[in-house]
Amino acid sequence: MKQQLAYSEILPNDVLEAKTELYKGYADMLLGYIFEVVKNQEMAEQYLADLFNELTFSDIQEMTMPEVNTYCRLQDIARRKLMSFFNSVDDCGQKLHTNNGTVIRKNRFIDLMDAQQQHVFCGIHYNGKSISVLAHELNTCEADIKKILKESFTIIRKNRNVAGLH
Amino acid sequence: MLQDYIESGVLEAYVTGTASEQEVKELMYMKAKYPEVSIALQQLEIDMETIAKHMAVTPPAHTWNKISNQIDELILRPGDDPQQFQGDREDNNYKNFNTGSEYIEVEAESNHIKVHKNWKWVFAAVFILGKIFLACAIYFYLENRQAQQQIKQMQTELQQLKH
Image 1 (cartoon, chains in turn red, green):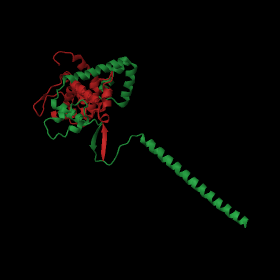
Image 2 (image 1 turned 180 degrees about the vertical axis):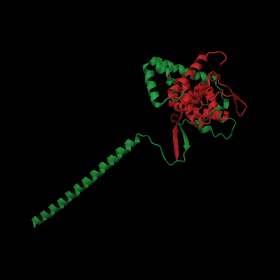
Image 3 (image 1 turned 90 degrees about the vertical axis):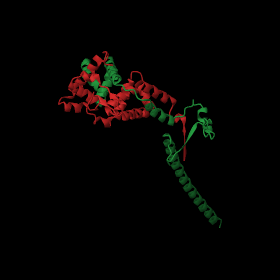
């Protein structure tokens, strides 16, 4: 049996253009994040390609609306895709050598945090741990974990414009 | 109180995707109601971007090819120049590509067809109308049969009266 599909039902050119723009703007940032999680160059690139391939027109519309931070929405999608990897990540901010010899850079913002702040920030951002899990690990309450997370962000904000960190 | 809420770390939990459903609902309400919360959230999103920019890794060119190739498989660009399909080939099978047809023919292996959801109402209406027509047909058939029997009975009575 033959089916017929009209062009308009498949994919408008707008989607290609929108994906191109998103890729130009955010692919390097997303790849950096995915790299930190999967710690494998080829796999990170494949995850990035899958992420963009699976973006729908409505996803793009939603994330490009005014007052919506497009990068954060893309990172949310990446985070959901990386769920299966989070458990295997054991550290953060470490210098690693990939298969082709590329060195993943150290995250200098993390170096500025104390051990507890690093544990919480990396646990959440790179290891995908929940606040309750971290509270259990550090033998404290969830409110304290949120406060430690806030302190981590305060360090990042204070130093984001400092020369030498970029 | 508002400052306590901002300082509680719930905004940070939200931008890192660890806030609970209840916290997200509450935050969306607070964001809509208080511009201070909205501004604080925007600042945190900028912080997230800062971290990401700091750790950015430029993808190699072939990564984009993986994306664009998949899109190209699904889309036929109307702006394509037909000449590019002809090349030097003598047995040019691409000549018929741009015939003005709006459709791509796809050979499907599935025995199923997809129909629009609205058709379910049409099918329901046809089914109900079918039942109504069937009921009417039975009713008129019985009426007709009864009438025929009455006519026969009257004819018999008339014949008896004549005799």
